[in-house]
Image (cartoon, rainbow over all chains, first blue to last red; front, side, top):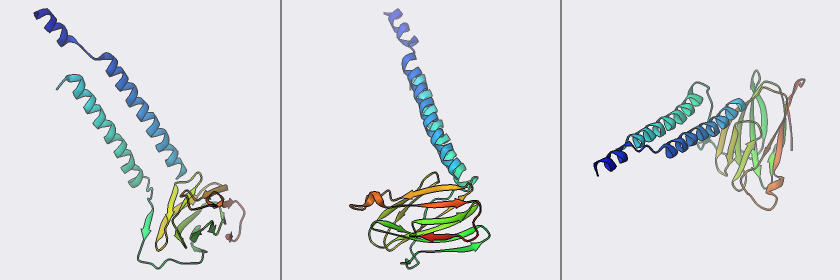
Amino acid sequence: MGTDHNKEEEFKPRGAMAFFVVLLVFFITVYFSIYFLMLSWG
Amino acid sequence: MDKSEKLALTLSFLLLSLFFGAIVYASMARNIEVPTCITDVEPFLTDTLFQTGPDEYELQMVARMWAFQPSVVRLPVGSTVNIYLTSQDIIHGFKVDRKNVNLMAAPGAINYLKVTFDEAGEYKFACHEFCGAAHHTMAGRFVIEEAINEPETAD
């Protein structure tokens, strides 16, 4: 029982974290590509 | 709260702050203007273009079903145009291609925005608010030319 409990604490949601980072990079890319396009239009 | 959850929330907050800060930077440091609605002046019914300073012009534009008056505006390179836009009938839109100009033309009100044309060429504009059967024909253009003595307009 004690061993199972320790295993649960060690769990890291690696897939979810990777997905989240990809999502952030995607948002930043989309947002700033439009942002700089609008700035260049003056 | 879980460590990863806390990290995700912090990153999300930082990202939103970054986006918001970029907008504040554009409006303050880069002097980007937003459309202004002028309600204390009687809307004009005829279009006019006149010079207000060196390389600075005032354009009073009227939108109606289904045309802009004027629909062709010729100006020299480097012109800054103060656009005052109103509508004679219903609500229209006004979007200039390759420029940060996006206005609504509303009857009974005047909308204002300033734009500078640094490069020669044709900048088409069109109505982007559906206004009836011939909405798709409601368009015009700014013609920015290197060698031009007098700015002119045409319907």
